[in-house]
Image (tube, rainbow, N blue to C red; front, top):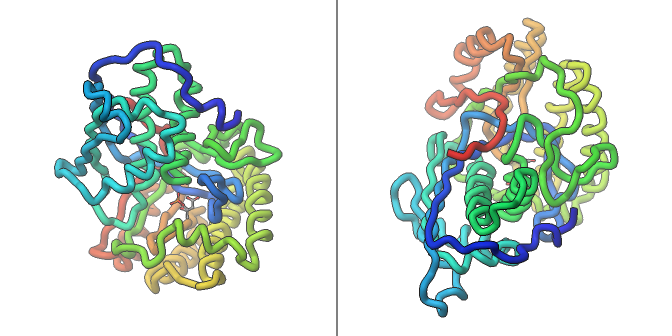
Length: 362
Ligand code: PMV
């Protein structure tokens, strides 16, 4: 599929009013996306677990504009957790401008967007993946009102395509449990334009795989991911890194087939540390990990060595640690987390999540 396939042709009908509500989860990458080209095209393919509990609920109310002259602007209000938020509007306006070509009907409606997160505000959890995917799905619900015949498959693909234009990794939050995004020669149907359901077998050991998110630092990140992505331009190790992501995806295919957790752990932890080493070796360089991030990593390594429980960590672009482990070890790992790790978290806070199936229409 190409961008052209997502162009909006004509509306079969133009309802006066309507609304839609979507609940969309966050996701955690196993193979990281770091580095992008124009229009949110990833420099390398990535693979993620869709999460279940960390999610955004967004509703979109739409009302057809009566004044023709108004149709040249985006006309919307935005509420976050019940309060009108003017400061969030520029981000949404930018998103609407990026998707205008594919969703020209947005300008024909007055929109009211209401959004809330299941996780605490400013927990350092990236809300852009769940937030942008929930909004993209609401936009697609409006499109479906105009064109009721679009298929579920097209609906999800275009939702992922639009979400990507909002925030790259958001395109991996529409479906679950495992989503690949970015063209890879051995992943049939993979595309730079949208995420696809991982087309290979997933061993049962990964069913209900757990992700406990340790909130090490809830503050604002010093360097945003868009700045970080851009620093991959001219990065001395960029080409080798992009190549490595392709290789790691090949290796993971075997792992997902045979449930080899030892190899899973070594690929996933290496990906997390490689992401952060790209940050540390870019120009300018920066560090998003905190001393407590390293304390936790070392504790996980010690515990794994001593207990033989296949628990590992991954990181996103921040200091928080995602602790990943099979469902069958939930009790003992949570015990370990409570006894040994939460003291390294801000206000001892952590979130329990697990692999999920994707967004839901409410
Ligand atoms: O979607 P963005 O632009 O916020 O980038 C996310 C990048 C990482 O979280 C670090 C990796 C990933 O693949 O999710």
